[in-house]
Each structure stands twice: as structure tokens, then as C-alpha cells.
Length: 201
Image (cartoon, rainbow, N blue to C red; front, side, top):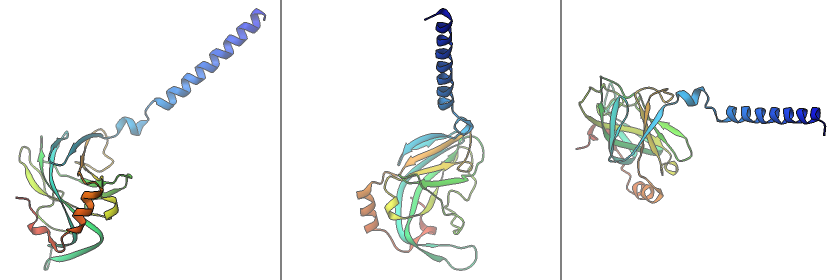
């Protein structure tokens, strides 16, 4: 092989290696969404989970086949469901300044997210409806409507802003419900659960 052909072969190999390196960089370099995505802060039921602007502790989970809740005008109203009502009890504390819990959702094992139901009810105990003040713990509830077969392995998501928050913490708290626990809870799920009397003691 002549010197010229050896040089051409070396150049071709170099070009191939450079292209492979560029392709690898393209595949491994995070995009804008990944660079600016919320960073998860994970925890479990009974733990205080600390985010950037607030802390949240979940104490217990109740299931109900129907709810009785106050409305803005008139007598309390009963809400039924083809799934199950999930009432999560807990306490929230602002870390720095007054804030609102603007987002809460339940993420299932297959990635579906059910947002908290707070536009139908006017219970003073809903954690998404009142302002939270720095250093003052406020106890209350979050309410979700979920198909029973999607409840096992569910994780509660919470954030000061919307679900698509960027460059901020998002709390992810496992509810600790496996298949057997869901079956047991469903067997004893309460009908006519009163939201106005749901504040944990």
C-alpha cells in the first residue's frame, strides 16, 4: 500500500471516528427539557419531605365510594364516582414566604396522573385552597378520583407551581399501597365520607 493510500485510509478512519463521537455526544447530551426539568424530592407516607419552598408530610390515606362536601351556596352535596375517592391527610409548611400549593396529582405505576379535585368542593381543609405561611404547619386534605385498579403503587406529586414546573423541586411521596392493601381498603371504603369533618386529629 502506497503512502498516499495509507494517508487516505487514515483520514477516512478519522472521519468515521469523529462522526461516531459527534453522534454519541448528540445522543447523550441532555436537551432543554431535561436541563430545566423539575428535580424530584422523594419520600414515603409518614415522612416530612422538604422541597425548596415548602415541606409536606402525608399521614394517612382514606378511601370512599361517595363524598359529602360543602358547596359555596346551599346544603352539602353528595358526590358519587365510578372509581374511588382517595382522601390524603397531611400537613404543609411554607419554608420561606407565603405560598400556595398550586399543584397536586397522583401518579400511577403506568405513568398516568390524576390531578387533585379541588374545583367542586369548598372545604376549608383542602390544602390547595388556602395560603400557607412560613414556619406555620397547616393540616388538611387532598382529594383525588381514581380507578381502583390504578391505585396500587400510586405516588403523590406536589409542587408550588404547575406540573410542568422548571428548575424547581417537585415532591414525590409514595402512598405505600400495594395490591393487597388496596383490596383491603376497598372492602371497607366508606360511603358518605364527610369532607367538612375530615381534618385529621
